[in-house]
Length: 103
Image (cartoon, rainbow, N blue to C red; front, side, top):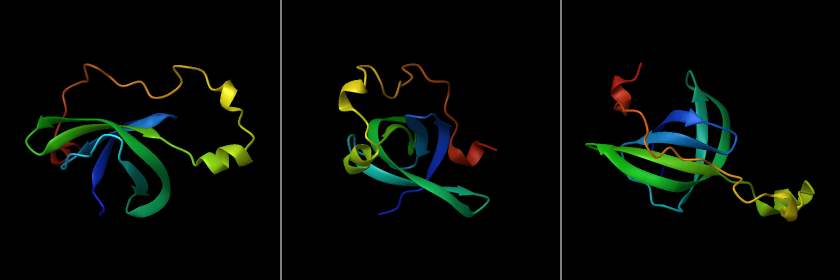
C-alpha cells in the first residue's frame, strides 16, 4: 500500500523521511521521487529507524539497498565493504515540523 512521505534529508546511503504513518523497522519500501508532480526516479530502501515526533508525525530513517544480483553483476567485492559503511542516523535531530508547515 503506498504511503506518502516527505523527504527531510538524503545522502548516498539513505534518507530521512517524515511520514503520517509509522513504518515497521526492517520493512522494505520503494521510494518514488517526484519533482513538480513528475516522476524523476526511484530507489529501494529499508527502514532502520522510526519514531514519533508529534501527533501522527513520524521521523523515519532508511538505508538504501541494491539487489545482491546487481552487486554481483557490477563485480563488487564483498570483502571491500568496510565495517561502519552505511547510514549514520542523527541521535539528536533538529525540531521536526509537520509536512503541512514546511514550505
